[in-house]
Image 1 (cartoon, rainbow, N blue to C red):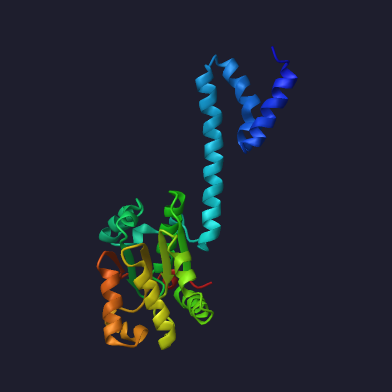
Image 2 (cartoon, rainbow, N blue to C red):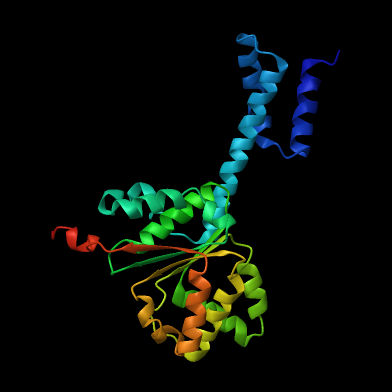
Length: 249
């Protein structure tokens, strides 16, 4: 029989080699608990494996949240769903399941400034990540500038390929800053690249009737809208600005 000290040393070494730090940290404590409760080997193995998987899952979520660039303060816990019409609440609850990603559907959120559009899509994005999906967030103007820079450096295809790895790309405030023709072209390239390949989540103060100001050309505008609405969920936040509800100090 292997002496206990040697057995422990070899087990720790194997767990280190297998990159199982959580099991390495808890196997003795869990073994004592299993012995006290007269649990079998299978129950003991289940417990340590479950702990390892949970820690690994949490670390992956933390990594995905950092990678997403989502503002973490904009969570669903901090969003007052009671302000929304029942239809919109139902839409939000359905979107939380993430089923729209499998269908490559887009989510378009319209509303006046202060209606909570950005907060809502960020909260949904965080929920998707906690379910293991990859999400990328950015203000539309900043993403467009990154794409334009990539195009100038002949790296646009590489950038679009990078974004294609995400289940959902969030473009916040599309149309908030008027685009030049070059900027419009790279924005359209992004939408065309993701068409029926991955979901786009967009917030906008502008209704479709004013999107000519974004894409500069009626045909391009129509083509962009057609790609977005072919498979999409449209949410209209026709509610008062929450900023107006904050009492003056």
